[in-house]
Image (cartoon, rainbow, N blue to C red; front, top):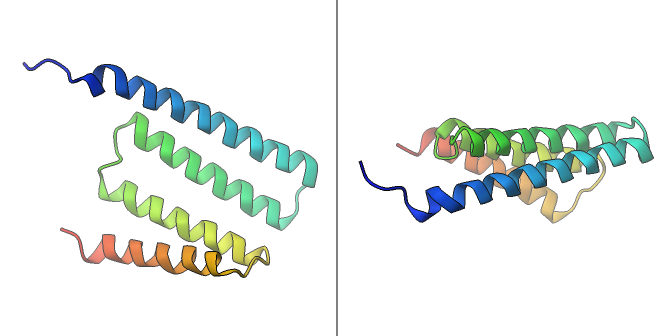
Length: 115
C-alpha cells in the first residue's frame, strides 16, 4: 500500500470543514430570507434552489461523488434551476439567460457528448 498523499491527509478534512461551514451559512441565509420576506413565490424558489445546490455539494464532497456523471448533471441542472428561479422572479438580465442556456448546454454536453 502506498502512503496517503498530503491532500488526503490534510486537504480533504479542510475541504470538508469549509463545505460544512458554507452549508451552514447557506441554510442560515435561507432561514433569514424566509423570516424577513415571508412565504412569497420568489422566496420559496430561492430557498429551494439554495437547499438543492447545498445538499448536492454536501453529497458530492462527503460521498466523493464529484467525479461522477450523475453529480455533474445534477450540478448543471442546479445552474438551470438558479437561472429559472431568477427569471420567474422577474430578473430578466443577461446573466439569467446565460445561467439557463449555459446550464442547459452543459447538461446536454454531459449527457450526450462525453464518454
